[in-house]
Image (tube, rainbow, N blue to C red; front, side):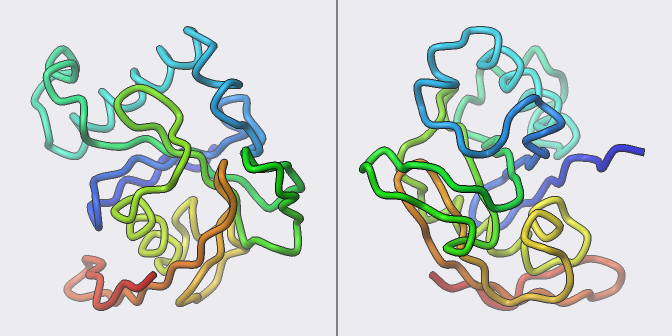
Length: 170
């Protein structure tokens, strides 16, 4: 079957989805998403359902009253793209691509809390973030976002069947 979204509460509650599963490549910049009302509505629906699944709200109807979390991000395998700064980002420069939405819009810079969520999810084998980065055990990833690249690290261990973050660094 299709990989399920990854929901994580580290740094900030975040719902990660696969870019190809929602019709994107992971190389998109703000205008590709923010000028498309259908895309924004789809991501808001994902966010609302994720918020219910994460126990942040009881019903999707409450999502409008809780705009700040969870964040929604989509991830993809590395690809070449031009960042908003005009800088070329190449396949070899990154382990994965991440595009995050906040307050209903695709974000330009990557907030520190979102970076922690990305680093942590990458450290947990089998998450969408980990798989987009090539899978396996990893303690750091460099991800491509609209304005460039960022390196984040995290360590996680399984305690009583639950993943716990033991370290996160930027």
